[in-house]
Image (cartoon, rainbow, N blue to C red; front, side, top):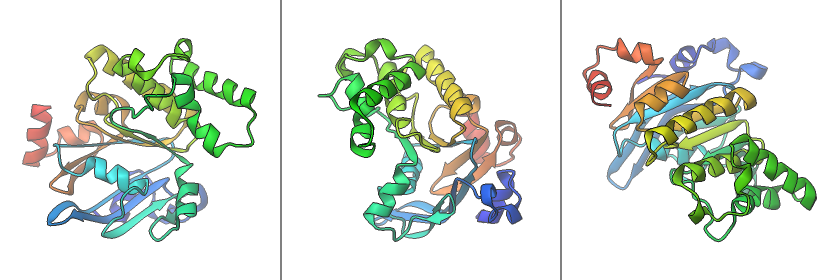
Length: 266
């Protein structure tokens, strides 16, 4: 089982820097356990992500990838272990404190999770209405237009989610995830259900946004090509454990049978 010290080394961060100013990882998960009843989902995993870095979390269905994201954003509570966001453990925080931390995170749900009754423009503006009450209506409108322009959706403000394609919905979801200028992005299956061209467009968009915003990102995906394209490092989960993590090239060189099997069938 990898310790947090080992993870920090794999993240190209010297352990002694972990407590110094900007050396603190944006996300540091240590020995995280989570079960639902008798089903063990996460079995003591440790991962760390620095600002400006993208970690792709891979694995078969049911290996706890999406649960990991839900734990990081505080939608689920771990059975044990720690989740540090910018060095602050989120365990035991009250709802107000947790909401304060969540505002620094952007979350893209697997199916975009847009509000069906709101237009594209209203969906992206939703976080601003609720969390940026000091913004005027015109300032909010300008911000929404800017966000939609960043994802190439500026021409679709008045459309309803049902009027646009799945790939477009993912773009709008990304724009909404960026609304509060987060320094952490959590993306759950951003290319799931998309054709190869749309998947490629989403990959290019994630790379563009990463370069512009320099966020710390965790991308959960089944899509090995997408992971190879957008991630600095990959972590492969199996039966609740991190089997291996490193660059795509390092995974290719692994002599672990499951890693070879996964790469061969993906």
